[in-house]
Length: 83
Image 1 (cartoon, rainbow, N blue to C red):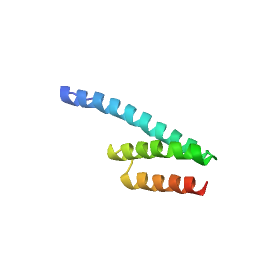
Image 2: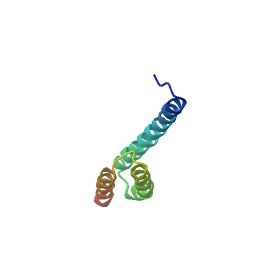
Image 3: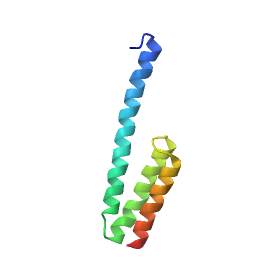
């Protein structure tokens, strides 16, 4: 257990950040799943910028690696183009 006030504060901050990052990550995964399950091109084209922005934000905040974000964006773009 932490003894110093600063380490106790750091533990509280880490818990808040982890909870927030988990929420954003799960939200982005659900959005990607919705985009992949879409069979209409118009609906997919509406969702694509939103999902791309989510992935960029996750990569910017180091929730996921920037290369993983690029790979995911590429795969969903290929899916939309194939519709």
